[in-house]
Length: 180
Image (cartoon, rainbow, N blue to C red):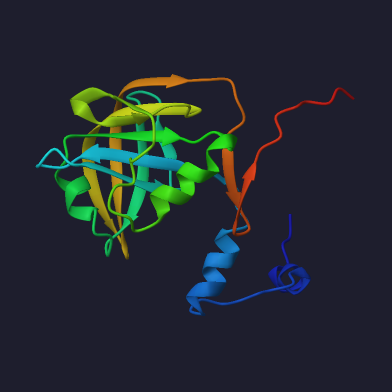
């Protein structure tokens, strides 16, 4: 099978060679729809830490491993690097307000948010589509981000529509199936 990359490249509306503006790279990545999560932990002083992240992915089924990443400039980086446990809360479509709250630089992101304590006292957000309680397995350097790999110790899920992020916007996934 022959591939003519020049013909394929000209078919694209926006074609860039690396390097280019970081904004262009971010826009291209935005074409990939992702789920939206709030990753939580407890720091050395017992303070609850949480932040919105869409860089979540499965790594392995056996053993059960997941990953997510955090910008190295984040004020929460040290807490996540030092924690033994963290949780990934996959948000429901109805939880856009929680997504926005945990993305903002406010003092107490948990104020008014229903939670229960998970493993190691890590907060689990009520109403999430899925929750993964993890042991902090390893942290890798990944450019301007730290990549966290967690060993899943416990998980749960609910049959409801998840919140998704695509093309720079939050969206509720339509889970109604139409029969053909």
